[in-house]
Amino acid sequence: MNDVVRRRIAFLIDAAKHENVKDHAITYTLRALSNYATIGKDGTSSPLKKINKRVSENAYKLLKKEGLEEYCKQTINEHPKSIKQIWEWLKKNAHLSFVGNADTPIDTKSICSFFTKILGVRKQPGTKYMPKPGNAAWRKPMLEVITKHGVYITYAEAKWVSTHFQNKKVLVWTENSTRDGWLWIHEATNFTADQKVLCEGCCDADIDQLSPFYGHFPST
Image (tube, rainbow, N blue to C red; front, side, top):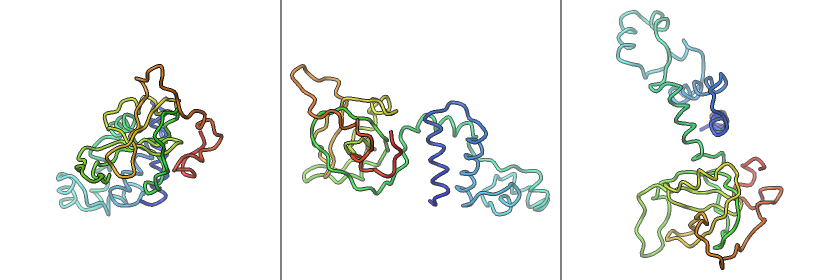
């Protein structure tokens, strides 16, 4: 993926998180990315048609019968799924994406309870996580939760993650997992009166230096 495509994707994800209306900027960006996915670059209608090899059966018959010039006049470049469908899917799933470096090393994490803000979430295959000795490999996908304290894992079904995604302050607690180098993160909804918050105030820092993605996220 080149930098141009990465910037277009980042724009769409950010728009899907904060906007409901699909304006011209969103529409044209979706179409441009469709072109990159199909032929590896963007362009105007006719030049794209001349190099695109993925066409419908009827379009192919028209090309064979009428020739390239008439084929370009009578066909349109369209994704198998409409732009509207793609936008609706993106709005529903944008919270599972973030703009960052997927290869960034995991920061040191502590086992404690604390207030934090969720900076991003990504869905990853369970096979990514190396089991500790004596534990079976995971097959189900998991969520990586990116916070100012570090990156943690939780179940893909954890609804509290999307609920608190938009930089809301949330009380969480962490514990050891059966995966090498990873801690679980949970919403602290069942704390008893004698359980104290062990860490508070870290998320009030004016820069995200506690984040393993420092330098890849805008300031919050």
